[in-house]
Amino acid sequence: MRIDNEKKPVLGIDLGTTYSAISRWTEKGPKVYQNPRREYTWASVVYYDERQEKPLVGNLALKRALIDPENAVIGVKRMMDDANQKIKLGNKEFTPVEISSMILRDVYEYAEKSTPGFDPAGVVVTVPYYFTALQNTNTSEAATAAGLNVLGIIQEPVAAALAYGVHEEETLNDEIIMVFDLGGGTFDLTIFRFTNSEEKLTFEVLATGGDDRLGGLDFDQVLSEYIEKKAGLNLQNESAENVLKAKTALLEAAKEAKEILSFEETTDIIKPNILPGQHIEIEIEREEFEQCMVRYFNKMDAIIDTVIDKASLSKSDIDRVIKVGGSSRIPKIEEILTQKLGSNKTFGNIDPDLCVAEGASIYAAFLDERVEWSKEIEIKTATAHALGIGLGDGRFSMLIPGNRRTPCEATRIFTTNTDNCEELDIDLYQGSSKFIKNNKKIGTIHVSGLTKRPAGELDIEITFRINQQQTVSVTIVQKESNIRKIENVKLA
Image 1 (cartoon, rainbow, N blue to C red):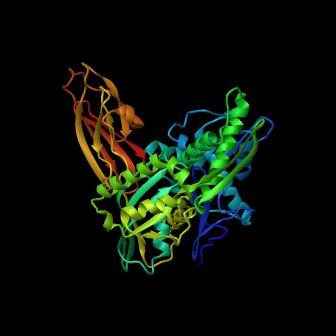
Image 2 (image 1 turned 135 degrees about the vertical axis):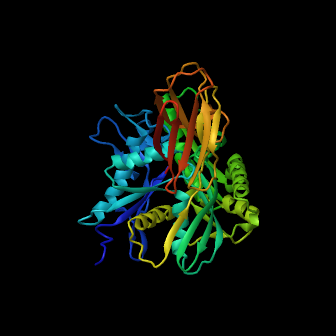
Image 3 (image 1 turned 60 degrees about the vertical axis):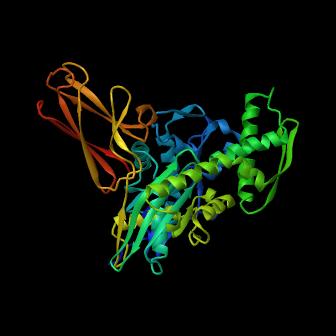
């Protein structure tokens, strides 16, 4: 018997901030689908106005966004921490989950159209490692809303490491690898211990860090502002519509310049009538772009130091760097990595735009038991964020710290702060701040039926447990009231 990996495949989708990709597992490894234009990625853009029957998604939506930016949404991945916010396009409102589901469905349909009788067994969707539980849950809900059979969610650096390990499995020994994932909207940095034995490939997360508001969109924005200033554009006294169109054109010019400056030292920017009677005709040097980016480079530099320190390693311990995401091609990135970690450590044999989707399909094949190797794949993860509860005075009480090996658990005793309290809400948070206002709320557990006691005399035992699949189980115990309540929170 043989599994049909073409008509009944398992899939991996890299749901990116700016571009997405889809891959399937084959007997020879992962294979990324192409669209009819023979492109491997789709723009993560949705466009809609009242003249349409349904929204446009992908590369055509991106083109329409340049003409009519008010009716387009780009970078919805950055909105996944609030599933209830409204995104107005045309005369309709959408949520981030609905927009993301459209993108996922559009990417999936390209694969579906390419193969008659297409009936996948399931899909794995990727998320940044630094996403919170809420962002991961919303992403999973978007995939389900798109009609996909979700086998699992995998963090992008883990997917990239899988792609690397499977690609190089025959030649690699044990090593410490750093995944430097700089995409359109997020920056993830993860350090793994890769172990290649006769029986198993092991990927052990040693430390992770990042910033979910640092990526190519930010670089485009800061460069567009520089172009506007250098070109001497005057946006005053212009209509709101003209200003919006001009700023959208500037962003597109900045994006094109950024990509060219990754390979060339200079580029010309020529934009006639960017405003009525105003034109742009300037030259931008790579050095100018890098000066615009200094604060972001400094952020990345600090995150590298922090994550290496969290892993209890020195810079010389890093054997290999895997660059992921289109923005990782910026030459200054290689310069920073070389200065910090040493030369000749960057691995360049996998495509930074596609390796996450490839790794996701490898993980899907692993979950569906399609990887026909004699070796087992083992993934050892760690918490990306501290976990705990909010206290009545606004402070955050941490139970499980960030970067703790999973599975793990921790228990702490709390008490009531009002007399004769019969019920209370226990708010769950992820984050590193001492104050809940700076952390992400991931859920609330309501407890009722408490025995009446004066404030401070009723002990409430709270236990957080995280299993290997990154699911958090929270147990609330109050013995005198005969209460034992358990709820689960999905982290990935």
